[in-house]
Image 1 (cartoon, rainbow, N blue to C red):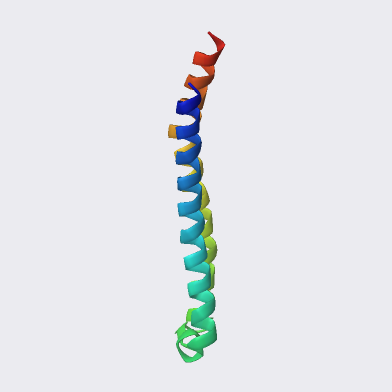
Image 2: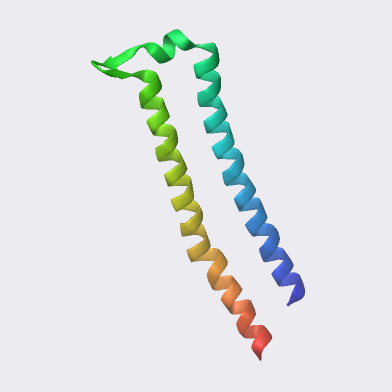
Length: 91
């Protein structure tokens, strides 16, 4: 039981760190584009909308999607396994 709980905790940390690294890469990639390629980010996609604004909005959407993906993973995998382990411990 204790080993199963430790394994579940390790899995949760791996998933959380993976999502965190992905978000950091997305965010800092955006910041680096702003810092080192201003002409690219200043290009207009359409009147009144630059590529920088569009990519910035996509960074926000990516954060929502990553949050949704983590919650979905937790609801489908982590929470049921945790409840199963709690049930075993209660016997």
